[in-house]
Image 1 (cartoon, rainbow, N blue to C red):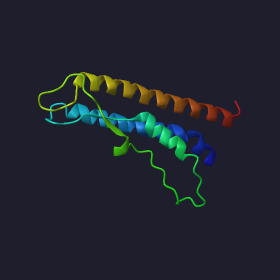
Image 2: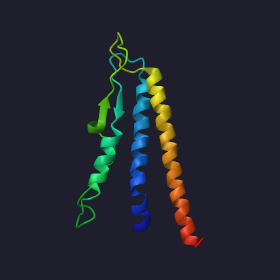
Image 3: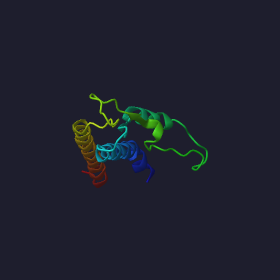
Length: 128
């Protein structure tokens, strides 16, 4: 159903990027003791702005333009540590855990927004 696809397309992209950010943050946490590991994060605003600007492109055939909202290497940024480490690792465990907790809350909030949208559509279809 094209109506539902267009209604949930942005939320789907948002959820995908939030999930990928949680993967990047969990990779940072897992490598907290790895020498010379450089912590990364997803530049969420640039990913979403790229997805929004890509929405304006129209194709004559469905397969001509492939949109990817994945957090590619171009959308990853290195984090600058507050305190330097002797072994060259830039992961600060407490900072990464706080970022992960916030990212998990944002992911859950996005799920709740989608659920609310679905509930509204369901009510409209039932005629309530």
